[in-house]
Length: 472
Image (cartoon, rainbow, N blue to C red; front, side, top):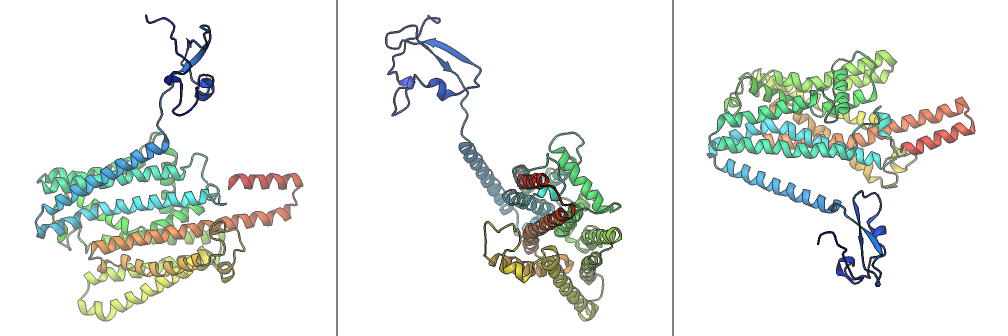
């Protein structure tokens, strides 16, 4: 019964596609090679009982498009659940407590949300570089195991899921009276982030985590020659000064067991908004970059390194003069310190804007009106000079608004502060395109200058050309 021959006529619907001819004769070609499990069943074809064809069993794999749509559906469902749960939790609180509690919750989670945004945008940077003629792996001295834009986006996706989920749990537990459990949510999240970065085993992109930690160590202690990746990452950290300031306040509250309380309302407390630690943390990224420039001047002797160090030093008075508002008399602030703060803010914004355009991007009028160099957007936006005017104009505006974020006495509305911090990250996202492209142009220029000096043979020229074509 179970071992006999199976007779299947040629017109059997099991051997036909919908609306097509019989497919007995091309089953082997249709199912392809490389399938290990195959069974031969003798079929009766045109009266011949000895004729047989292989029937191949293979696992049914859903299409990538179907999987992607399913993931998007799950992501939207998760977002709806988090949003609805968080809103209901907030509405359950009294009106007096609601704003205070939201400010505290925002303090713990907005730094990680901004970091997540930066990771998403960095993935877009790498995606554009991979589709252009810029070999970013060579610029940053990355090995062959470096993260691609897809892996960066995968990390950003998990961050996008974990951080809002923890925030929703915090809101839900607190609104339901589980204060101790609510207080543990941000603590566990911060602890998990730290452990994930320093985990010593070869899992979760170990080489990339080691690369990041090593670069951060070189930024904090510039005891060796400064590489492009060192000061590139340090520049990004200056745009995230507010992130580090909020992380410091969050960790301070965790250490002093003030999470899920309204102790932050005491502005003069050890973790309050008037704490002297805030300007100290805000200024650290600029000091790191300042000492990098001094080290670069020592190693290379370029005068531009000193001018660049001067640019970062202009951020110091902006930060500390703003913090003085809480520690001097109101008359002294209005008549003396506030005008100095305004002057230092204008100086820092304009100096930084000039350096972005003229030095970091190497923009000139000739370059703005015609693509006379190998440009990142030359094949996408050839001749569209509005790209340059947009990035220059938006950079000037966002440079000025970023001063708002560096000023402690202006950080009352946390939603406004978060928006400005996010816009600064977007400005840095734009800055990365043209800064990396300018560095790539310099590398190509040096290569072109070395070729005539070395007078290479025809074979060497062909080899260099093929290598360059492979790296793009």
